[in-house]
Length: 491
Ligand code: FCB
Image (cartoon, rainbow, N blue to C red; front, side, top):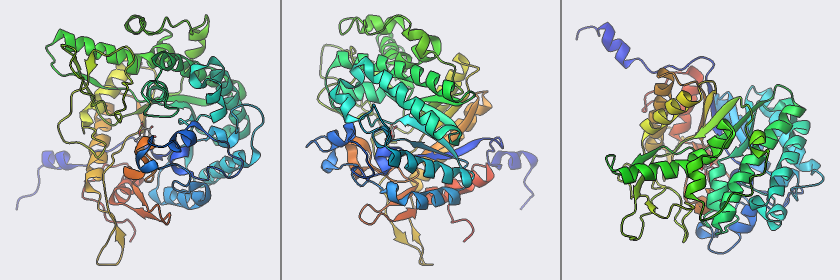
C-alpha cells in the first residue's frame, strides 16, 4: 500500500475546536432534583401540573426524578470524569424562595451554594439559569406570567441570587426558552400551568421579556461585570414549498411568533410590527408599558441557543384540519397564537424518538445567520441532544455498557455543524450537550431518554452510555472523535 498523500491526511484529520472553546453538559432543576417536598421547597406549577391527571405520560412527576438533590456530589464526580469545563444547571425558584416573594429559604440557598462551590473546586464553571419553567405556584395563583407583577418578583429573586451566590456563578442566564413558558404553558395546555388563553400567552411573552431585562439589570447592579445571558430555542424555519409566496408568508409569521417576539425586544429594542399586526385580533398589546422596551434591551455577554430540529411550515388551504408536526406534543389547542392558517407538515426521517427531524445543517444556518445579524454578540449552544431508547448490556469484560450509537452520531454531526458555523465566521464559544443524564422530560414524563448517562429510575443508578465515553474524549482533546470512538478512556 502506498503512503497517504498530504491531501488525504488533511481530509481525514479530525475537526479541531479553539483551545478556549467551552464543553459542557446541561440539566434543569425540576427535571433532575426530586426532593419536591424537602428542604423547605415550595410547590411550583410543574408540581401542580404533573400531579393533575392526564397532563403527563403515565402520570409521571418530578417528585423523585434523578434524586439529584441527594446525589449531587456523585453527579459532580461524573462531570469531573467527563472532563467538561462547564455545567449548565438551573436554580429552582420555589426551593430558594418558596412563595416566589418574601424571605429566602436558607436550606435551599445552601444547597446551591454547596453545589456551586464543589463545581468550582473541581474546575467546572457553573452556567446558571434562573428560570427553567418551575414558577412558584403562589405566583401562578396570582396570575402567573400573564401578570406583570411576576416580572417584578422575578427581578427581585434574581437580585437575591446575585447577592447570595455572587461570583460563584460564571454566566447568569435569566430564562430558558421563554417560547415554551409562554405559548406552551398559556396557550396550548402542553406545559404548566396548562392554560388555554391566547391573549394570556402574549401577555406572558411580554412579561417574560420584561422579567429578563429587569433581572439582567438587577444582576449587573449587584455584581458589576457579571456575565449575563438568555437562552432561546430559536427556530430555523423552512417553507414546505420554497417557491410558494403563501408558504414564504407562513415562514415570516412563525418566525415573528417563535423568534422575533423575543430577539426583537431583547436585542433590537422593539416588537416586530408584523407580530403586532398578525396578533391584533387576539390582543392590542396594551400590556406593553412605556419604558418597557428600554428595560428589556440589555447588553448581553452571550446569547444561548437551544437547537434540536428544524421547522417546516405551509399555509393552510381551504380550512382543512391542519397538520401539527411542530415538534411540541400535540394538545387540543395550538400554541401558535394568531397563526391558525399555518400548518406544520409531518416530517420524514431520520427522526429521533421525539419525532424531531435530524438536520444538523439547520444549526449551522441558525448560528451563521445570528452572527450576521448580531456580529458583536458571542453565541453558545446551550442545549443540543437526542432522545433514543437504549438499554444496558454487559460486555465480555463484565462492564455495563449502553451502546447508544444513534445518539453518538447525532451529537457528532451537530458538533461538526457548530464547527462549520465557526468556520463560516460565527462567534460560537460553547456547546452544552443535553443532557448530563436521563431525566423528567416534561409532559413526556420518563418515556424519553436524552442523557449521555443512563439513570435507572428504580435505583437511581447512573451508567455511562457510549455517548458519555465519546463526549469525554472530545472534552479532553477538543478534537471531534469518530462516532465509533466509544471505548472507555483510561480503562
Ligand atoms: C428543551 C428544554 C429542556 C429539555 C429539552 C429536550 O426544550 O429546555 O428542558 O426538555 O428540550
